Image (tube, rainbow, N blue to C red; front, side):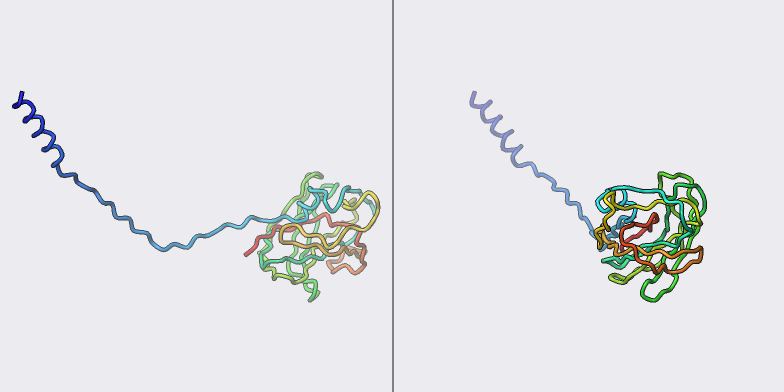
Length: 199
């Protein structure tokens, strides 16, 4: 019996004295620059969809008009597309202006094929400076067009902000020329849009 106990004690001691090999893994962390992809903004589309500024879209058949909204961004960014929605299929000119300098920055022919959806056309990207006034216009070509407004007929509650874009006023001018509209009518929201991304 003593022999068995001694033998078992020797096994336990031997097991306790066994060396454990520790494996160390070395991890090298290199400096990296993380890029965050900021989402695109379609401010006029979102304003229309949310019905927070407007609650109805009426179809008018007068014109032709060059019509648009003045806006600014709270952040520097870039406009990469111009868009439009019309009740009649066709090609419509949409223009982006430096409102303060009365300068055309970009223009695109937008092909509208669905009276329920905004269509977009890519442009050479235009840099937008924070707090600077710009204007987005379209020409109705004498075709029927949407006018987004309030059923009550009251003026829209400008200024109105959606994400980084603040919309200020609505203007229009008769004709088909690409000009900055001069007649104020703050009861409407344009039926065009931009695709904007913060830089």
